[in-house]
Length: 398
Image 1 (cartoon, rainbow, N blue to C red):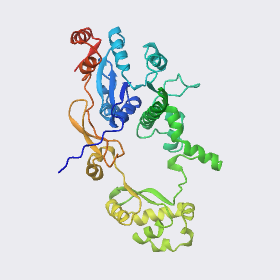
Image 2: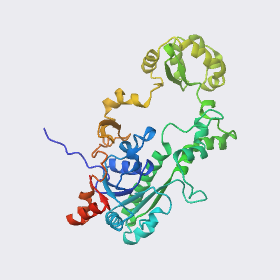
Image 3: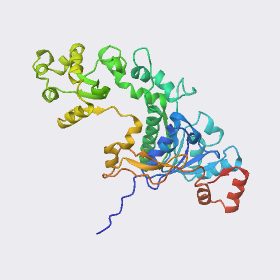
Image 4: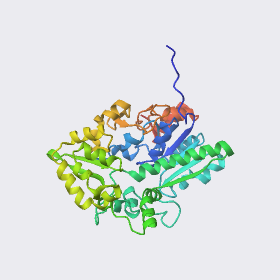
């Protein structure tokens, strides 16, 4: 049998040096690293703070820092800062998500670095793009509140943040997309450039559909729990033994299939329910009938029925249950990942394939300074210099 070589990942040979923490900046490096780039994570000698978070933040570090190398440097020391500058001099891309002005104080801002390396691509992940808000401190939750997303997620009068760090994650992805675009332009012009991605503007992109709904209709969008659905049946149903399942009928072709499958011939014959828009207008009296008729069936029975007839449905899953999801397990959607305390778990891979293959987990999330010696040697430091830096606390190695 002839062995077929695995094709190289698309960004193999690209070096990224990231000065990032929390979620937004690390997500950018995660995407580029998964696609083959060498990503060097510059972190403090005590390590990225997300290594020590509790509660909702306990999974941040292993979720967003695979396929990276760690070099631990104290940028407040001349030796640590010089080492960082040497690494940056070898980079195709520098990525950062610190407060405005922080990188300039270190001499690691774009205007300074591009003087020595005009091919450099510099990605800044911020709370806001330049404008009146740019110096505000931003968090995912603050921009969800001010950007209309929390209003749309919660019930009327009860704004509620989305159940994931949606702006942090998407903001990092847009930073990576900007870096990819800048790499393509560099191929054409030989020049690098600066990319900025921001939480607030990302959030506005997410709610654009609701803004344009108002522009189209003149009617402000209601929060999702109170909205008038575009489809007659598009809801969570509570069924046998208190189980819940999401069921949808989103076309006029699906309506007779649904009615016949569920024994609802009387509703199929009702002239008030012929079209989807008819069913939307009839929801106030139609939905109670459907809830009563389906209440005696189990969620599993309804799921099997809807799958058999190619109707949309979904179990109501909790995140931890996804470790056992048969589709993720069978399709290779999860990969072994080393957690902060060293035990192994599973992490979702990028939600895409290239030639039928998910970009792999090549490097485990690194220990603090796991690659410090290796990277400093490659940057031209002699062993004695490295040991002196470690002894002085300007660097750390694992």
